[in-house]
Length: 397
Image (spheres, rainbow, N blue to C red):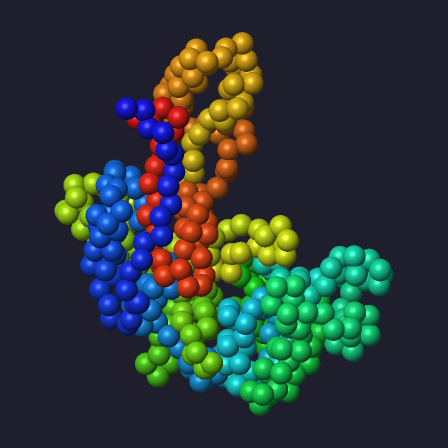
């Protein structure tokens, strides 16, 4: 029978995950239990995805603000430290900032403007235009910022992040100076010891700072990349991808977890005979049209995945075929012609006009975005996602 449904994304409920839990068993039991309960069956090339949060929690990968402070003091000297280009987030960065400030006597906080790296806005471009400010060259003090723009709160959170971050630093016992600039080397007018907190531009920022005379440069990936007094750590990403756990503790991005996805894949194959793909996902990679926030605050969408998820889609654009190659056909003839084109398509369609408009992104980034939207970030209770039919096409039966 011809299949009448394409891609299906299901949130799978599972127990609340605690440190030390066996995620292989929990994931397999939860997916198979959902299949039995809801009356569906697994198929080859289904995708099972686990949110990075439950992976890190099962690993027990946590650090305290005291751990962060000790690492900052040891690596940057404990005096005046520049903290540049942080994202504006209570969940993602505020607790990190508290730990950083505890390891310094003074923090020079340099915020990018009009927004942070992932789109959280301090200001609008219209405000900058009206004030005659060039964000590519102008450096603003806190006093000048307040004089020109007053108090600005985030559209969705209602937080004035300038005030919020300043208070965190002061309450941690450090002096604070706030400036607004978009050129990394600007911070070197204030201190030569710098923590660059940007995520996706971090390598370039480190290079610019070092080329312009910085004495010490650490990215967030260079902090908590080894244990402090038995703490958690992430050798590859450090504090990047961390989330608030409590008021004085954060959960790091998961440690190496390729074995986890391979073990889940093997267990499903043993129990069902189906070869599924498995991945761990964090933030999706998409932009909100209202708040202009680009969701990806993690260093990568997927820190681990099975080999069947390597690559990008290789798809033809059906509407292009219908409007161009087969513009003179309709009904059954059109359907058959398009089906034949799909069945005979090349393994690599790069540069082929019939593939224009298809999404040129990695499979894991596309799937991770779908998973993130399905699981949500609140109380849905579905940190495991099952995606079926993603690799189907118009000809799949």
